[in-house]
Amino acid sequence: MIPWLATTVAPSLIVCGSVVMAVAGEPLGTVPPGAFVLDQGWQMQSSALIGDEGAELSMPGQLSGTWYKTEVPTTVLSALIRHGVYPDPYVGTNNMMIPDAHDVHNKRFNLARFSHLPDKSNPWMKPWWFCREFQVPRDYRGKVIWLNLDGINYRADVWLNGQQIGHAKDIAGMFKRYRFDVTRQIQPGTTNALANPVPRTIPFGGGSMVNFAASRRSHTRLTSATSLHLPGAG
Image (cartoon, rainbow, N blue to C red; front, side):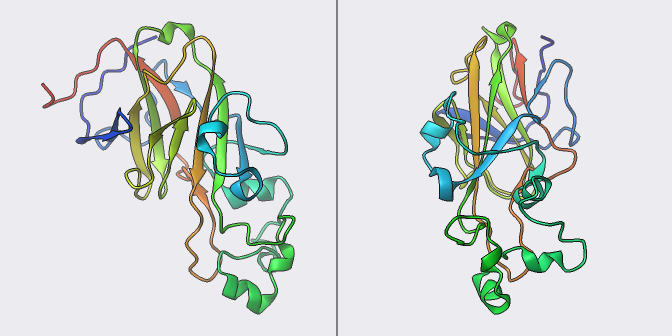
């Protein structure tokens, strides 16, 4: 594994005992050699159906039942359209067959009847979970391991192997990039699990979508380094 040494980073935050940094000094979409990219193999489901227990959903072996396979970046609506749950809103008047985030709008146009949820509730009013299991290379053992999220929009809670390593109150902003020191949480050579609940959509009255890392050049990845120097950190 080729070490990736950070040269320019923003001030760090302490979240759940891990170092979290908003990254600003490197081009968006840059993936260093040897990075373990996690953009494929995600599963997505509404918390209305699976609950909101991050400590459980972020443990290996929890992806049972009905989930929607997807990759990131994406939006919840885009993924559901790819699965045929909702029609393409850019064709004809299909957008009038998709529930809106705003219930006043839904009531006015009788859109709640198109909800795919069993109780016909608004599918955007509760968070959606994006979960992924992955094997970490054995040669990450003994190294500092960083989880890089490129393109968070707009908030994110981050769970890894049953532990919350990031909170939406800290991880917030339009297409921001964050880096987490996950050396203690990652288990090289075995199965790990990452879970991100996407907060519910704030309704603006038309065409709202739920986003997860929706930048077209974003990446979710793991990197390792034998050492890491933070300028100004001593």
